Length: 423
Length: 157
Image 1 (cartoon, rainbow over the protein chains, first blue to last red):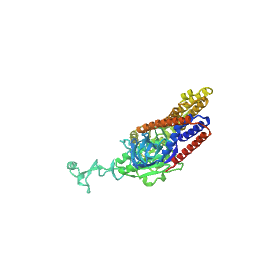
Image 2 (cartoon, chains in turn cyan, brown):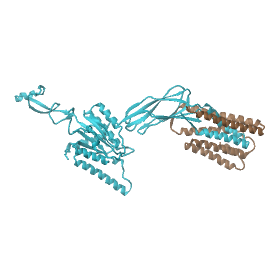
Image 3 (tube, rainbow over the protein chains, first blue to last red):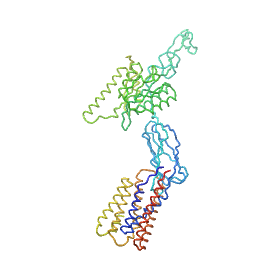
Image 4 (cartoon, one colour):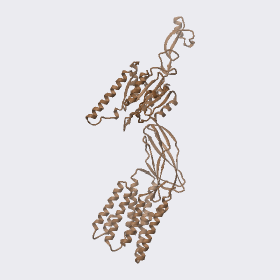
C-alpha cells in the first residue's frame, strides 16, 4: 500500500511549531498549552502508525447476465498481522454497470477475513472488466493514509435483454434440412398437398385407402415438406447516433439478438456479419450453441471509426450462403453500407432492410439554416428508402421505443406483397 | 473559540482580533461546505493566530482558560475533518463512528490536561536565559522527533 500524508499531518506540525516559537517570542506560555493537543496527536499518531498488510481475493472470475440483471461481486479482505481501524472501500464500476452499493468504511480485525459484496446493475449490454476498487486505510489517528488500487479482474458479459418476436420475415428460398417452413414442393412432410395415382416406388403408408376404394385404383397422398432456411443478420456498425436514452447501435444489437434467437428456435441456420470499421462474422449454423456464439459476437459489437472503403467482397463467401435471407439492420447513414446493400441486391440475394432510424436521437439544429439542413437530411433518407424499394428491397423504418415485433410484422407484410425483381 | 478570543482581548486592535476570529469561524464553515480538508487546518490556524494576537494585545496575567481553548480548537479541527469525510456518501460501520468520537474526546481531554500541566510548570518556573534556551532546545528536539516518526510512518511495504 502507498503511504499518503493526510492534510492535517503537515498542518498540525506547522501549527505546533509556530505556536511553540510564538510562545517563546511573545513570552506567552498559554500558546504552548494551545499547541499541546496537536503535539500529543502528532507524537501518538506517528508512533502508532505501521503500514498495514492487506490481502484482497476476488471469488468470481466470469459472470454472465442479461441487461437489467443485478450481479453481486464477492471480495474477501484480510489484514495480516494488525487490525485496520478504518478502511474505506470504493468500487469502480465501468460505464454500463451501475453500482448500487455506496462506498463503505469498515473495521478489519487482524487475520480475520471479511467478505464484502458489491451489487452492480447491468444497464447496457457489452463485455466488461470489473471488480476494481480503491482501498484507503487510515493510520491510527488519521495522520497517514495507505492507499491501494485493486485492478479489475472479473469479466462480466451482459447479453441484450430478450425481446419477444412472434412473426418473423419468411425467407424466399428454403434449405434442404428439416425445419418449420412448409414449402411449395412435394415430398415427405406433414402438410397435405394433393392426391395422385400410385406409381411404383410409392410407400404403402402413403396410400389413401378411402379414395383408392372409391376410384377403383390406388391413390396416394402428396405432402409439402417442412424445410429450414439460412438467415444472415447484416449489422451496420459504421456509425452510432445516440443520446441519453440509447442509440442506433443499441437498437441494432437488441433486434439482432431477438431475431437470431427467434430464427434459431425455428431450426434455421443463422449467421451474423458485423459490417463496419472492424468486420466480424459468425458462420451460419443451427442449434442452441449458435445462440451463444451469436450473443457473444453481438456484445463485442462497437463502432470503430474508420475511413477505409469497404465492399461486400471483403466478407468471406461462406458467411453469405446462396438463397439465404439477409436481414440488414442499418441507420442508412454511411455510404459504405448503402453501397454494400446495393451490391448484395445486385447479386440476387434475398434482402430485407430494417432502417434503425437515427431521427429520434437527433433534433434539428438551431437556426433557419440548421432547420433546412435537417429537413434536407430527412428527405435524403426518404429518397434512399424509395431507391431500395425500387430495387425490390423492402425497407421498414424502426423508431426508438417501437417494439421490434411490430417492425418485423410490418416487414413480413411488405415482403408478402413485394415482388422479387432481377436487376 | 471566537467568542472566547473576543472576550480575552481588550484595548487597541480589539476589533481586528474579533474580525479575525469571526473570519476563522466562517473559513471553517466554508472549508467543510467545500469539502476542503486542508482548508479546515488553515481555518484553525487562523483562529489560533487570532487567539495569539489577542493574548499579545491584552498582555497582563495568564489566561487560565488556555487549556480549554486548546481542547476546543483541537476538537473543532478534528470534527471539521470528520465532517469533510462524512460529506462523501458511504456506508459506515456504527462501531467506527463511536470509536472515532471517543478518540477525539479523549485526545482533546489529554491535550487540555497536558496544556494545564505545562501552564503549571510555567507558573513554577523562574524564567531567565537558561530556561529560554532549554525551551528552544526542547522545541527543536520535539520537531526532530516528529519528523523522525513521520519518516517511519512513510515506509512502504
